[in-house]
Length: 137
Image 1 (cartoon, helix red, strand yellow):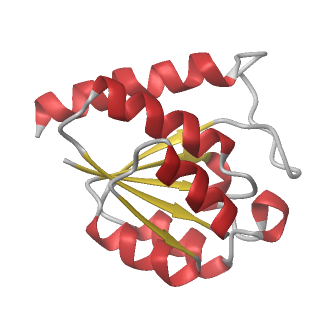
Image 2: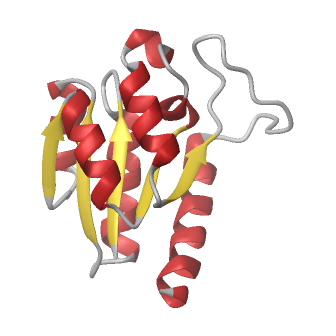
């Protein structure tokens, strides 16, 4: 299974995702794409197999991935303080990959119903879903 992790800003969520995916599903191929080099670097240090940065990397990665994981803002143009371009959001949204989106209330995007769930718990839930996906492939 090929997992694409997309993150922006400092890459903190992506770093946590990559570290947990690497630990729990060691045989998966993880590509980390950051909207900036800091985010990409954080995910590579966490154990991603491959890393790339920027709009074209998101577009190409979205075409090749089996699963795309990241904060919900990766499907909303101009989100994450403007780091998600319309082309990035479109590529993720139109990808044939399964998307696992983490509900984060940032940048004028408010997801109701998530309560005060912490990132650690959300990352655990992502891992559970990924395990289900690997058995269905």
